Image 1 (cartoon, rainbow, N blue to C red):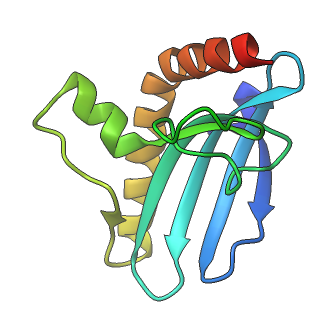
Image 2: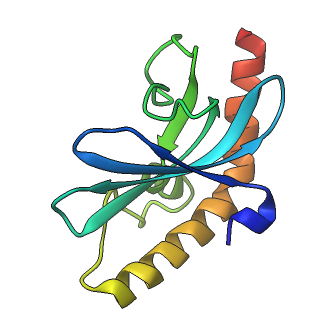
Length: 131
């Protein structure tokens, strides 16, 4: 679903979590990205959108963490969706079985691709201005 759009899969080293990012080269060494984070013992995952350098997903601060942006910016998809539709309220997305995981991932990635261009443009502008 993401690779045909130019995203490349990366697995990040994150003890206690599985962090998987899909990065697409953008401008000036920055990458547009979608990341999935899964708890080791839970049947849930979260999705984040961001603009990062290399595969520094876990090192990049969240959107509201002040001026330190050496590695990029990222934000949880639930927060992004809530901004445009206050009835949406999720952080971790639960599933119960492999079929449920597949459907939840499909829906989450579709939402990420829907919201991605605006988020990447906003974050990218901020990061290019601070370079």
